[in-house]
Image (cartoon, rainbow, N blue to C red; front, side, top):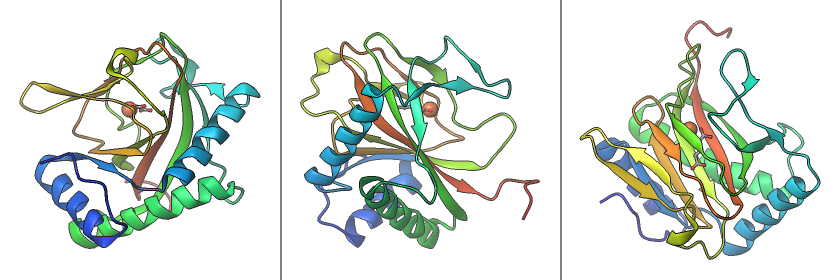
Length: 210
Ligand SMILES: O=C(O)CCC(=O)C(=O)O
Ligand SMILES: [Fe+2]
């Protein structure tokens, strides 16, 4: 079973996430935050987008704008996060610690950015491991879209090792987790703005200082 029941904060749900990640390499966790906390993040993301504070995403070492992805992003600023961002990062960090305890993943930090995909934009099939770094171990995407319908499109298509795939809709409050090195995935175009927080739990990269 990979779609978990809404969690009654705390350790039980994290335990089930850990089991699902160990067994399947991915899972969907509803209810990481309260509805009010999720709405605060959605409102902040939308306000930043409307104020044109998100920048077109870049890919790869050259960091050139690319037709591979059509989202605009803004990293959560370390040391200067809003209350809503801090509440989210605190929960994600608690999950990181739980994963370390059970799975010995050696995850040392989380990074996160807001992303907005306008109608028609997607992200072509890819792996989250960057070519020049093995630092990203667990990918996590937290969705911010109220009343999302299947007809809105915008699924995250996760390619499974058996050759099949799963489509995950970006419903507000859902957290999708998967092992970064293992699962290719793509974002299918939507008919409305699609808001999310894309995150990675990182290990100390080979060759990195410290
Ligand atoms: O928004 C999503 O569902 C996934 C985004 C993604 O794949 C990425 O930012 O690397
Ligand atoms: Fe990705």
